Image 1 (cartoon, one colour):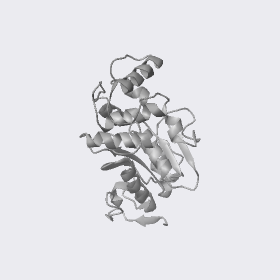
Image 2 (image 1 turned 30 degrees about the vertical axis):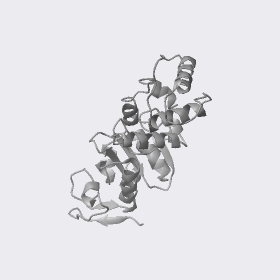
Image 3 (image 1 turned 90 degrees about the vertical axis):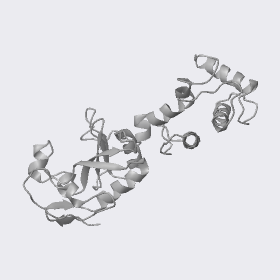
Image 4 (image 1 turned 90 degrees about the horizontal axis):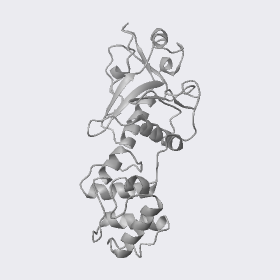
Length: 255
């Protein structure tokens, strides 16, 4: 799409979640808003990808005066209607980590991505690829990575989505995104595996240990003597406490 000019009083709905008023310049001078509608459309897609129910636009279009006032050059992507700074919120009202948002923005092919702080992220659809991190030296002017998953140490694997689906069946409300984030860890740490336990979570542990080279006998979903012996050997090898699987064991088994 091409960049459009909207009057200051325009209230056009750009997507299901965004009005043009949210992208107004914050200088207070009441001038028109310049914006490429492709930007809010990309952010709308990103909301679905990270499971967000709300996004706050902390900075959208900026006139040259305002861009310089907040530390910009006066001619960056914000001044061209191609950029915005955003905070994403999950279903429980908590902020979705910008590291997670960066990874999913990468998946969507967004050209300009940069963590601003512990809450906000910069996104732009400009012609230059820039994947930065404004919290580190040089991360504002230059790209810091070609892969945010590796840069932030975030796991994206099918075994994680399998676990998230199992946990949701047990009553949790996780976004099935394949990312080992704090919500997934908190959910799985509320469970333990003792001898005699059975079910899909036990089967998942058996499959995971088998993949790591620990013989559980069979992936039958029953924590019998062979499975518990495999868990104990894995715990010894990783200098973890023995007896049952739980607590910090989940951190290790997910790596």
